[in-house]
Image 1 (cartoon, helix red, strand yellow):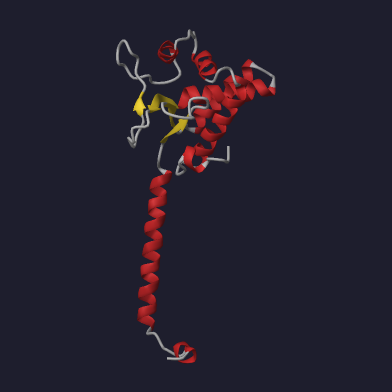
Image 2 (spheres, rainbow, N blue to C red):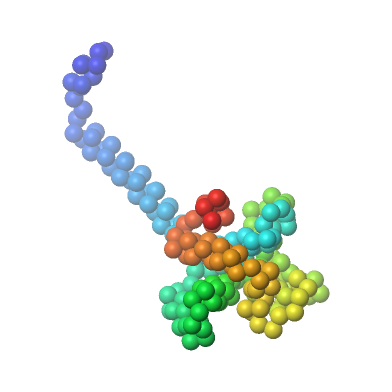
Length: 184
């Protein structure tokens, strides 16, 4: 059959409608999958300085609600006028509020990282707190001090980590350390 003959083949309208329906169902199925991905409310993000080779330290974060972010911003704005300090402290307080635990990827091929645990009690470390400070061998009186110590007082590393967390919070379907590799 020549090209001109192919152009003149008539396809019944019912078949066209069926093909369109299949295409729409496929599109809807894909959109439903994407919506499911968007409904993801937690992620793991590698902590800078602990992310080169196993064991890789990760923080598990949850999506914050708008009123929680607003409360963080209001608190920080009352505490300091310096813009850099505001940016850094709001990042630190966001980590603290959204962190659900500290985890470690030991490179064993496990699909999920393992909860970091206190050696003396085997209790999981649930955030940037005194338990994490104790496990890491330093003293900290506040969660903020713990964050600064974990990030070795490197405010740029804090800002980089905050960018990843913020990008994930704006699109929870992303796999943070995979999707943002090379971007941040």
